[in-house]
Length: 163
Image 1 (cartoon, rainbow, N blue to C red):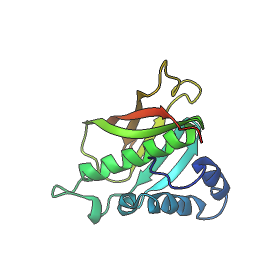
Image 2: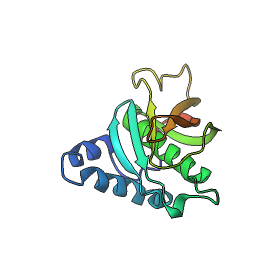
Image 3: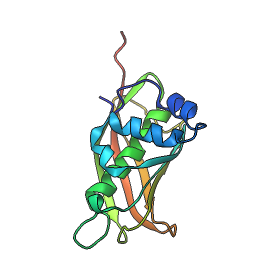
Image 4: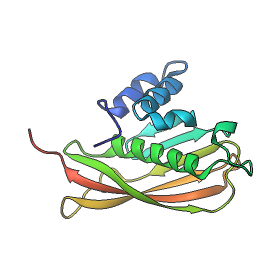
C-alpha cells in the first residue's frame, strides 16, 4: 500500500512546522516510515494539498565517483516528494501505489538539490474509471535554480475497499 504508515501527513506536517526544528522532525518522521529515505537526510520545505518541496545536501554518502549526487539518491528524493504530494492531495476514498518513473537527467546534480511537485488536487485524481493511472510531475533544481532532473512518477489509483 502507501509508503505512509500513519494518518494524515498534512495534519502532522502543519502541526509540527511552527516549532523550531519542526520541519526537520517531520522529515525524519516521514523517512523513518520509509527507511530508505533516511540516508538522504532530506528536509521538507513545504507541504500543502497540491504541492510539496523537499531538499537534500550533497554529502559523501549520496555522491558517486564523479562527485555528483548519485542518480539513485536523486530518484529517492523524487519519490519522497511524490509520496508527500500524493498523500497530502489524494481524496480519502482513494489510494495510490507507485508503478515506476520516467526520469530525465538534464544536468549534473550537485550541491543542494530541491525537488518540487505541483498538481491540482481538485482534478488530478479524478479519473473516468478506477483503477487507473496518473503521472505526478517532479522537478529537481540545484541551488542556482537550474533544473537538473525532470521526472514523471506513475501511480496506480484505486478505490479503497469499503469496510
